[in-house]
Image (cartoon, rainbow, N blue to C red; front, side, top):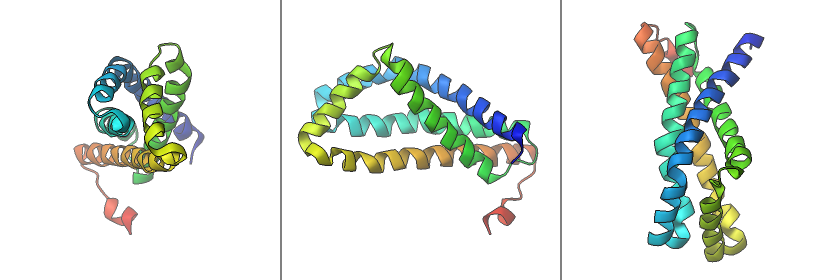
Length: 162
């Protein structure tokens, strides 16, 4: 992996993580509040799935598409790396900058309700959702690379998969 690629991975993933974070600032507290009123203890799990599908996956797809646009020879692993870096950056943003905007308050309440239902096992219940999030981000990045390469007319992924 070239040094220039590492910087591009991080820059592209960070840009889309910031965009996703801003979208999350606008939507997550409202979603959490509504879900807490309707499904109470499972609000955090549903909130996680909704935001993976509406924010994380599309932003990773755009990150992969952008990387593919900048690199004619983009490979599937580039999409995986973009997806992983996106999720790491957005989690970092949520738990650092999110504290300033009180975005984490409804999420803390939703997780507290989950903890009331499952107790200590709530961490084990949450783990598959984190794995789902990583998987969807990697899939979004790979899908972005594939779509970008198809637009260019260069799709040689049958060799990469084998």
